[in-house]
Length: 345
Ligand code: 5GP
Image 1 (cartoon, rainbow, N blue to C red):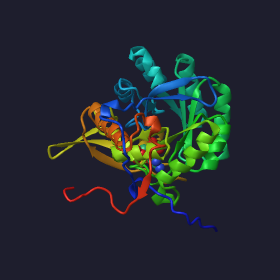
Image 2 (tube, rainbow, N blue to C red):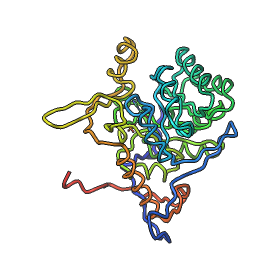
Image 3 (cartoon, helix red, strand yellow):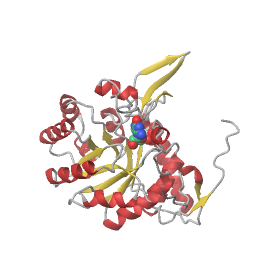
């Protein structure tokens, strides 16, 4: 048994130190970024925020709303081929820049992925998503997918340590998804004791990925626009959101009315709710590692997005970053024992 003593930090442990700036207004800040990828000649430009590939968040409706603002959606893996056909026949052409097709690693998943790309060869992004990206089987699957789709951008995860980021990049991933246990409806840390505070995971994984010419997505744990700014400040190339985008018109999940108030159901993809919906129940050998919650109905996602992008622009002006790209370089974190004043919460 071994103990690592250097402290690992989460978003709640830090704030960003303000710095002298020449920017006069938030409107001067550019949030769009351009990326080149490790394993293919594609380039991407847009605002590097992503809706999570959860069936309550990574919906076609969400993708249409977010793509209008150049924001990305990892479409969840539970749509049928028929659903994809309907969507792509009506969606604007540029949608292909702002969506990923998600897949697990089973034969059934692979068959569906292959079918989707046979029908829509113009789609560019594949998101291979498993709860635990540390298994050899997963690395082998990434290698196989790279061989099958040499000209696509492959996102693979989730992991939280530099050596595994390197292994996935070397195995064919372009972008590695980082986060084990920080999610709003995740119970992995409770059920298994496994995890890694997200801010440190980002700092360490970004360093590993950038050294090889890859990128990372910080996935999970953002509860406010400030957390998203901290994730970018720590070195995340993209930030993925679940809970912050739940509860909107474009989100999945049934609507619930209670005493005149409206809520929407939101649940983890390993929750009993999701497993009952998609695989007919929780298998005997596993425990659910996700919660089911009711979030207050929040209206159109456009308003939330404006709040997020406004917050991020403001962060950039506080540290003098004219472009989101410069935010990491201009970020100094301070360790803190307090965050916001909650007297009126
Ligand atoms: P959030 O933004 O809500 O804090 O986190 C979203 C992320 O939580 C997702 O992108 C995914 O990585 C993770 N997640 C979603 N469902 C589950 C689940 O049931 N269990 C666990 N462990 N993580 C989940």
